[in-house]
Image 1 (tube, one colour):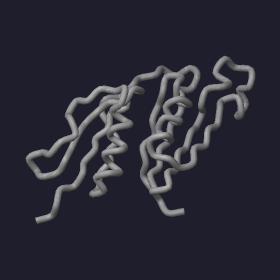
Image 2: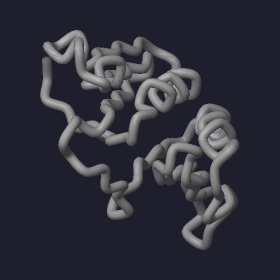
Image 3: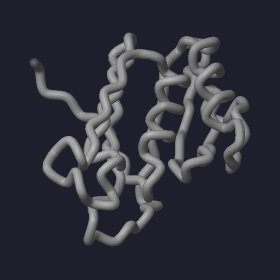
Image 4: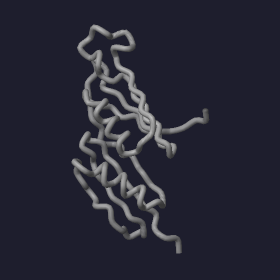
Amino acid sequence: MASRLNPYLSFNGDARQAMEFYKDVFGGNLTLSTFGEFGMSDAPEADKIMHAMLEADNGFALMGADTPPGQEYNPGTAFAVSLSGDDSGELRGYWDKLSGGGQVQVPLEKQMWGDEFGMCTDRFGVPWMVNIAGAKV
């Protein structure tokens, strides 16, 4: 397998719901492993997600997990997940699903650099940027 870079998101007990939501957005194969499956079967967190991996058919990869027991959940604001390309229909579809139930900071619309761009935070608190490349002149 070639090296790759992908986001790894932390959640506060709702990783299963969040990763299932992202599977609905992007499609693909989602694998979920719980803390209980890896030696913590008697712990209160046994059904929480220790590791999740979403591999979409288009090559996108997204990982996530619930915050492990004994660690503090600190949602970050120094990151965003960026989706970009020139397939307007595909990217608008992602935007509609990600922004639904979330908060839009910048509406998806044409920007001064010629592309369509928007920023939103989904219902799980994850910030997203979507950029649809404009026509090349």
